[in-house]
Length: 474
Image (cartoon, rainbow, N blue to C red; front, top):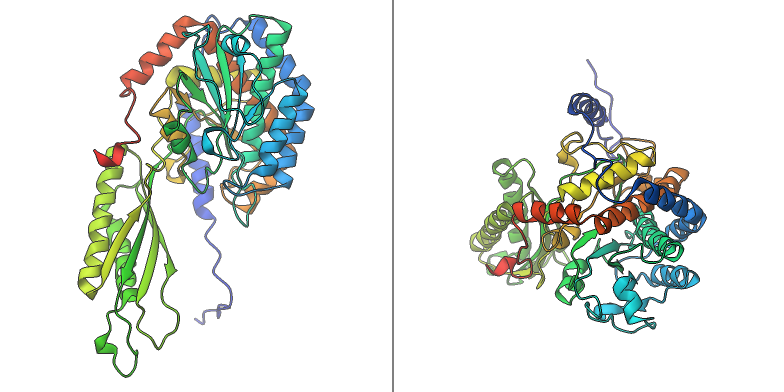
């Protein structure tokens, strides 16, 4: 039997059967898992207060959709989100809120505050550093709503950060408006903190080290996705570079006098491929060659690999990184080259620790908007990625629920299809529903001391605060 000749000028098309099977498995697991747990009606803010909050969010909907669409039309990569931060600042000012810009030494980071302590402090001026927490209400419970707005190079908002930003800003504005209508309705503080460069940097770690979470008791934000999902696995990440140094020589007349740095990089890549058979199913190791020499007739003197190592738990991440470092050194030994392993001075993305009671508040809020988030374990965790919200969630109780921005279950993050969805009507709906969700979670938490105690108890039971900044030095 003659096989058709493949057009070698084009790549083969990935088999779609895996996505079909994953969708079938998700449906089967959802059928037996039952609904995600939600807060009982007598926990959190009163039903009539949440209903008024819902009306406020709907009144803000045109502005929230406009913000999401504006960011979508002007994608900016990490630390260059100048249009985005200006758009958020302009919207806040339009509602009588004066933000602080360039906070914590990060040009495109913004911070604003409402609630009991904010009123005591008075207005903040543009470019003014945030005042330290405390003031006349040193023990006021404080919730931070975090916001991302960076995009991907060449893809745009393929991670849906435009929708996520509208969620966070919308929640903050809704709580501010509710507070105007009902003075004293916020028995604590709510902080809006934008966090640039989630895709390209671990900016939340840098901001946390500089004081972003001082005085903060809990933190929340959403993530765009192809499902409404209460909780999902987010892997920890270690970013690494391996720079191999060899000895150049003529590749034809005297190759024996050279030491080939590209050979070392090639062996390292081969070793990583072999290592994958002996790692945990949720571990990930991926790398690219940033430098492999300039011309073929000179033995490469320098080669550089850019690597990302991922794992589900902090302790397994640390173990896997050690194994990868041994492998990188072994490639240098085999080729007689030198190697320098370079890591970020800051801890990269840590696994996300989701807070149970806060997730229950989120689930209830989304059901009130006609959505029904799936519980953890229904959607396969093999599609897990990473986020620097993990660095926040190991310092204070937090949640990072996922909100559906597309009508297709097979749309993946970091694709042009996801970017299109984030700027579509389904993305617009998610921008508004997520804004209500975050606002309702914050309102529930502020209004119920018992819920706050349960949130804290859940956090402590999961291990309490972790020394994230010192993680790699332990």
